[in-house]
Image (cartoon, rainbow, N blue to C red; front, side, top):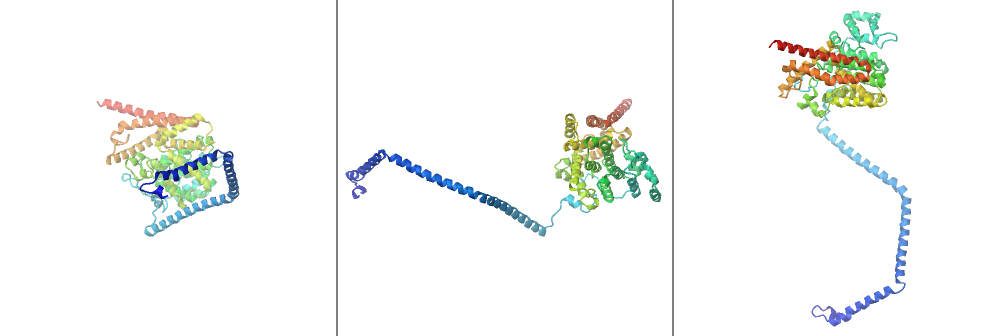
Length: 514
């Protein structure tokens, strides 16, 4: 080894003799053994034996696993459930700790509208510094007139609207009427109620003689006429509280006021109950109640400034509702905030299922009054008109029909007798110009048809265009759906011609002055 491993001068012959030659002989021996008969078979047998043993072990292990899995699987699932439960509880504990810390450091603030309506009733809300301040005052309407309405409705079998005044001569009512000294007003109101099933129902006169209570009395009378108070076992005092609050919430705007709410409520009722939508769609009592209340609240707390103004001035409501149906969402939110207080909860006697139907229907209907959604809703309606005659099977079709009803009621002035239309046209023009004035003050471009300096030129054009492109196509489609409304098409044409005559007269006067 010393000769081989010497680091200085190893002996080459020693390396060959003691290392190289033995390694060569060992390799030759291995090759010889590998080529001898039987060696490969022994190797294969050994491998096969090992594989057999391994397979047996695997098979045994699988059998054991199959035996244990029924026991392990539930434990694994239970473990996962407990882990999730522990994680949830841990999160809840952390949230509770945070709430306790917040409560100690600072009281939890309610949402502004929740806090606003905690006191109950219609509430003051400043939409914009440019909207006139309105502080709702709830004033109970004439109790004797309300009692007379309850006595007259629902109409007894065999009786008609023409005979409802007979109840005023009942001894118990006659005495109360004489004592209150209000017989003339009550008689006049009943004369108007006789026309509640008519397209020319006189909301304006009712508003005048009842000192601004047309919305209350119209809705109250319809609730009793349709026997909804008895059907849902509504508390009469709560019904009156609710309607008084709703009426008080309407601002004294030139157009979007409580009288407009009464007008839409009655026309919506007319389309549903008189023109035949109720029968065609086989409406439930819940849907009828929702439609009636939806009409009454559809402009709850309207400030007289439209959605576009709210968006352009970045108002609180525009931010809250992301510029989507701003006022319509507000009308609904305020209504349902109002009924959180028992005194105003007109729906308190409904079952949860009934309430959900009423709420969902009201939401769909009131949101449909946003003219920003008009094209989409109208297109859906015309498409469904071409596709089906069955309007009662699918809930979506029923809601679409009800949405069209309140939409038509909302803009029905253009298809009313001219003496009614002319009054509402004056009102809408006044409200338009007030918004135009506000836009001028905040250096916004004035919206179309809202510049009072261009009234003589623009307003007739605006009304004609509105009737031609919005009202008339809608009335034609709805009258095809409900043929009893066909007369409204002619009324719309007459009102359109009214403005054309006005334009011609103005042109003649201008020509004569030159």
